Image (tube, rainbow, N blue to C red; front, top):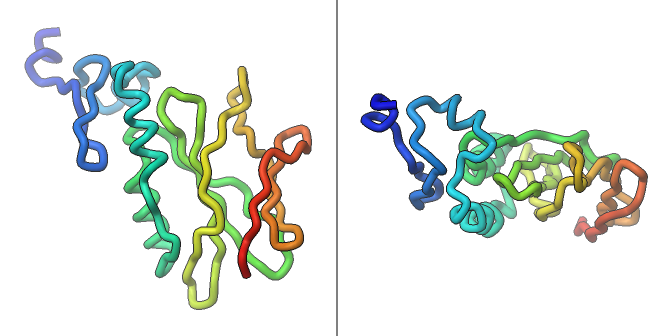
Length: 164
């Protein structure tokens, strides 16, 4: 404990802000594996910082996408990809990231354009299924220039028009 007190940190930098942690951590894995690693008073602020952060809407290439999304991801929390959108004649990629300790994820749907460029087609926050480890969004398809999002039971939970 003396080592943790002497060398541990109870704050971290995120997007130019100091975020208070629930206790001091010496080891990143200890921080990452603690489900209550943020000070309770910081959770709403972290959620706001993550949901207010702007990306795109145009990206030079996939490296630009990855760089911009990595700048939003909160350290120690997940970022992943979903299956690509079912669409004829158009190509989309889906990325999402966990918002710490609020059972929500921020989704980014990106359309691949000519020359390796990408455009942000949709950007939104969705809750996880209540009482479940599963994301609320289970599938995404394009129909009549609309992205249609469905849950695991096939219910439509969101629709977004997409420009050509």
